Amino acid sequence: MSAGDISLAASTAGSDVIEVVYHSRTHGNVDATVSSGHFALWFPGDELINASSHGVDVEVTYRDGSTNTSRLAL
Image 1 (cartoon, rainbow, N blue to C red):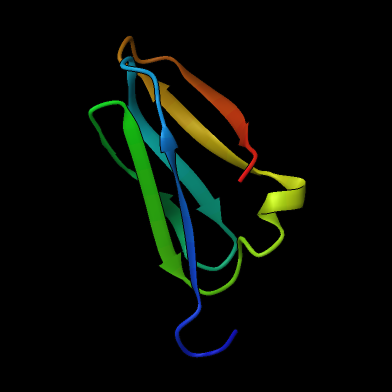
Image 2 (image 1 turned 30 degrees about the vertical axis):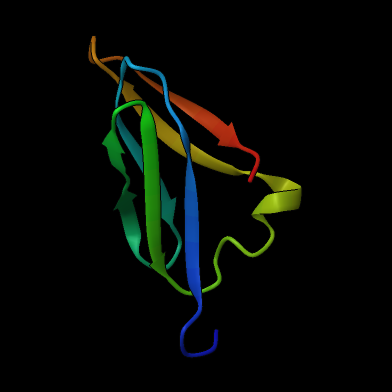
């Protein structure tokens, strides 16, 4: 990791999505900002460097309280 590296994921989310959490090896749980059908999360480091080829798992919470693990292709 070099100074200034940042991991970032952003995309659309259904209107029933209220929370998106990435379980980082380095930083623990990273809570995304979720608003108006979109989400974004970011944290220091290059942990998501291979996410474009391998994807990344996030935990999604829905308005009804249910959760699901989804694989994002970045």
